[in-house]
Length: 337
Image 1 (cartoon, helix red, strand yellow):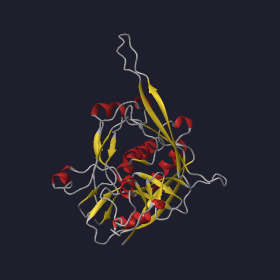
Image 2 (tube, one colour; image 1 turned 120 degrees about the vertical axis):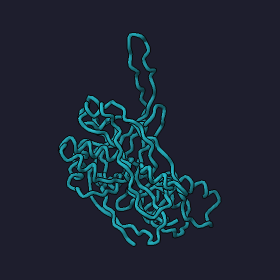
Image 3 (tube, one colour; image 1 turned 180 degrees about the vertical axis):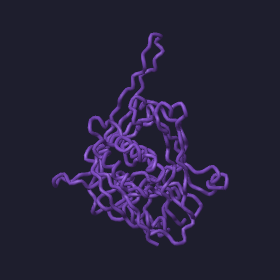
Image 4 (cartoon, one colour; image 1 turned 90 degrees about the vertical axis):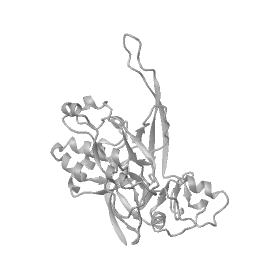
C-alpha cells in the first residue's frame, strides 16, 4: 500500500545553531530537530503575528522531527529493531551497521517491509552515519559542522555565593550548497498533518526570516521554505508502528501493555520558555518530562496518538497570559518486523 506524506523542506541559507542541552554536554553537529522543539517554534512564530489562532493550530498540528534531505532524497532514523541486512557482508561490517543512524527513503522502505538488502562501505556516507542505496550521486559532504565552546558566567551577589562559571557548547551545521550560483540542495524536512495549512504556512514564512535555533540575532537558522510531498510503500500486513517524533503516551496505553515487546529509549526534555511572546520571561525554565525517542518501535498495528501536555503552572500562566505545552503526539508509520 502506498501512502503520501506532506512535508515542509527547510533550505538553510545560514548555519543552523543549537546549544547543548546540559552544561559540559558536547554536540558537534545538528542532524535533526526534535518534533517538540519544532512545534514550539512554529507556535511561537504564529503567536507573534496571529495570536488569536495559536490555540487552533496547537490543537490540530502534528509534526515529525526534522531530518536531513538532499534534493528529492529523504533520510529517516534507523529503527531500533535493526536492519534486514543479508548475512553475507564483509568482516567488520557488523560494527559499522551498528553505527548507522539514518537511512535513505528506499532503504527505509525496504526495512519497514522486511525486504533484505546488501550493504558495503560504498553505501555509507559521513563516517558511516548515513546509509544510502547508491552513493554515486551524492557530494562528498552533505553538511559541515563546527562547534564553539562558551562559558556561562554565574550571578554575582554581595555574599559571594554566585554560581561558578560553566562551559557550554554551540554547534553550527552548514548544509550543502553547490557552487553554481550557490544553489541549495540540502537541509531539513519534516512531515506534518493539519487541517489548517494556511496557519502553518503563515508561521513558517515568518520563521524563515526570523530563524530557528540559537544565535538568531546574528542571522543563524534562516531558511528558504518549500512545501512538497513523498510517497512511501508501507506494508499491508503491518504488525508494529515506528515513531518519527518524540512521543508521550497516554497512561492507559502504558498500563495496557504499550511497552511490552517494544524497542524504545527515553529522553528527558526540559529547557527554557524561549518561545513566549513576552521576552522578559524567556529565561524561565520549563518543567521537564520524559518522552519516547524517535525510531522507537511498538508492538501494535494501529496509529499512535499521544498527548499534548501542559508544563506551566497556574501562577506562571497568570503572568505569561498563556499556557506552555510540550507536544508528544507523534507521526507514526506502520511497519512489519
